[in-house]
Image 1 (cartoon, one colour):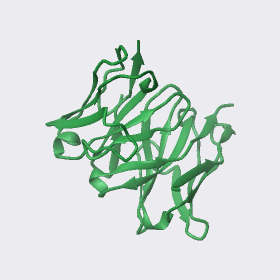
Image 2 (cartoon, helix red, strand yellow):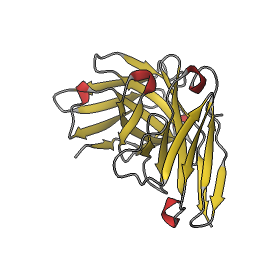
Image 3 (cartoon, chains in turn blue, purple):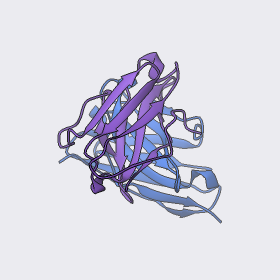
Length: 120
Length: 110
């Protein structure tokens, strides 16, 4: 069964750092392009970052320079290192596998999400 | 402010048909990029409902259908059931790379 399980969320003070993990099973992370998508409380979905199978990474303008996406092929796990966190980063963070060609791609499956709360 | 525009809410009685619109621009849907739809039940992660404008993954009932024309797309749900009550999101691709979503539509089954 293809599955994604996130972990690492929690309460963090503004300016702090947190690393999210996304463990995959049923497929190989390094052979796919993987994204992080977040959802602020009561709000819609926002794409955050992608890592392609070749290793290229891209970020939404809202997190560029503060977040870093990476993967550990030996653990079949995706990561999101979040630094200089702000209140507006408060959200449930989902990891998701990209499917289809890049410009026509969709996300499937999604993990269950992990909540990040940035507050003093 | 989401890049793709959806109505905040729609409603319908059991058995009825409802549609949810998704309007983009020439840099995303109008550029020829596909539209995909997700269903998010309360307290759960989004689930793929329609991909490539009109394709249903296995396990999705044929009551759900999608279409795309110009800079817009639509999701139609026929034979509305209580279990369809959820938030629905459209998604496409924009430049950069950059994946974009609609603001979501809350479906209420009356």
